[in-house]
Amino acid sequence: MTHEQEGLARHFLGTAALAGAFDFSMEPVYREAALIAFHFHWSRRECLSLSRRERRVWLEEIRRINQEIARSMKGKGR
Image 1 (cartoon, rainbow, N blue to C red):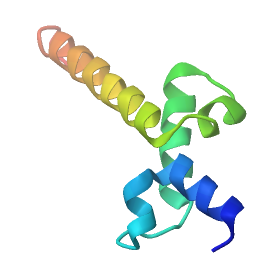
Image 2 (cartoon, one colour; image 1 turned 180 degrees about the horizontal axis):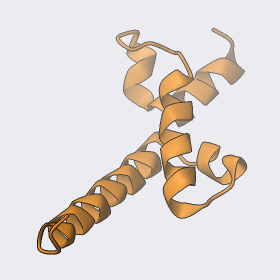
Image 3 (cartoon, one colour; image 1 turned 120 degrees about the vertical axis):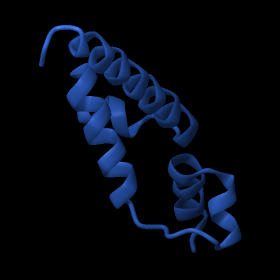
């Protein structure tokens, strides 16, 4: 792995990924970025520039928002 690839892996997947226990596929990153882009209408560049930690924070916020919406919909007969 080149120094540049190592830096990208650290940014997108977190430091633990460098221990070799994780898949270096970008597919999970793209999936997370797509979900964030869909919910917040952010650009691809904005979403892909987020660190792993930042993506996880926003994904947790999306989960919380969706749970809140689901709870509010229960009382409306849907």
